[in-house]
Length: 255
Image (tube, rainbow, N blue to C red; front, top):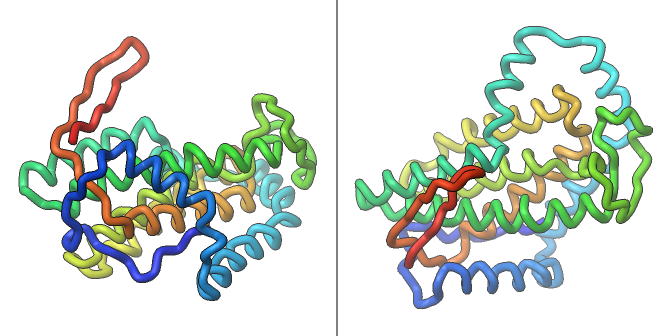
């Protein structure tokens, strides 16, 4: 995991000369060797996430059976209303909304949160988590395989369980928003953001999309990379364009 300490907030950041795609590439390269420079505290936090993931493994099957046999309207409603926070199709409009508000009110932390959110999503849910899912090859709970059965490098649909991409995305966004808004608003929003991302993780287990260990590791990856990206001295976009396409829409940042 990557843990940024101390945080660098958007209010203190100024635009630098690097275009967005260059800083994204530089961050991706730094991400590859970042663990080599972990402090003792960072290794302790990363070890805690790994330990929690390992400790959850023996209970994955039991939890799956419990949610299969015991469902209720309250938990179903919570799941339906929170799982979308980890879906990129909902997060892209959120990034656009944040950037638009930041531009309208000339509020740099909100614009930076939008730019950081996209980068954190690409690095965590688009790079790190998919890489681990390929290496692990764990089948999704709906396939009813043994929870502790892994198929490394199987490259087969339905074996993208470990870790959870939705959870990674949700916690990355929560960390980015928390870091960028903390200097202005303090800590009042922190419990809400992580309660929402935790509810997203819960929905993935409740809906049998992932195991408990999947969401624990996903949460660790998303949180650590989200805070790390938010702590970088990043450029902030000047313009944003959205073009509709037959399969959705294209989001383009201009600097």
